[in-house]
Length: 228
Length: 228
Image (cartoon, rainbow over all chains, first blue to last red; front, side):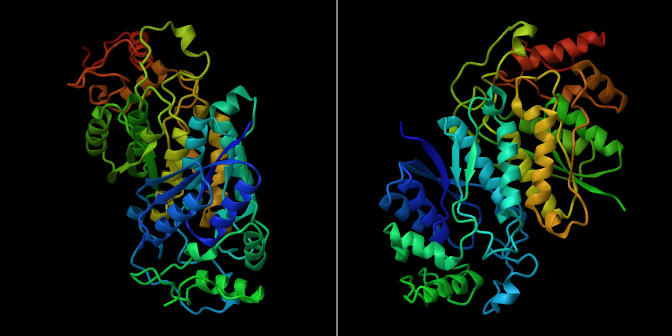
């Protein structure tokens, strides 16, 4: 029997690769994106294209109100940092951090999983390149998995465990790209930039663009995304 | 300095009592309700009235898409059970259970707390009367608290811990009511019914009504709520 999985799909490079991995492992993928008050919706358009092209069974966009909290450069009127040196990126919590984002996203994934009777959740978090985000660390994921099992009917019935899959958690950006290319991923479809132009071209200077460009450089190939 | 707290306020008897407790302990309360696809919005109107009357600093209603998942009698077109015997209520997971509801609600509370720089979250869960809900159990709350501390900037800075307060967790309904009355709570303002009339009158027969009526009976007083 095909196993169902809920997969968090932002439309960026990491979650697209995670989708390709889940599909390659034979999962029936229910992809989930969020309109959470992002300053742009190019990544949601990318998510829809990727879900359809790589064979997700279903793709839903949930509108939630995280932007209303403020507190992040990705949702509020705070400048996205540009051209930072890589060593600076890992220091402290970046202003692009969205409060409790992965906790909220994983909670929704859990709700959908419970309704679908799915026991697996995929999330493309990566601890290496984004060490500044507290909710990308393995200890957070492990703790959420434990909470998820206590939170749900599964936890009471105790028959089957919820598992949070994080296939990218210890990979470098270059390794993620290599992995995705081997699975046939077309990275031109993905959107990573924190601050794209109105037409959806990447800025090339924010942390996300820089990490991505470096990843392609280390694979000695050009990034197929469209840059301003 | 007054400590800020985020408090989940449904408009029911339990969360109203929790608000009175938090206020009596000197907290500055940011009350949070959700429009999550409930079949009726009487409880949101009750929440607004209670927040204003009992001195919450702010009350916000967040619209989220839990109803879209289906799977519960509180959001989907499944009949609310009526006139069940009390011993049956504790058996298994009730059809009124909303998938991962408290995980989703607490995640939002955590996001707001982080933006407000609050370290305390109050939730009126009760393990005694609703033993069927997995996400009302103390072990779930403890696990969520641990996850919350790993999820957020606090977890990285390690200066101050998030605490999830559950002052009602081991009280009976009768004890909760006694506690609230001592703090001046007017329970006519609260809405507990799972299936009220269009005018907002309680049905008197669902599990929530029955538990509540029994609680007042054990205090030898009438329930001031309006019944159909």
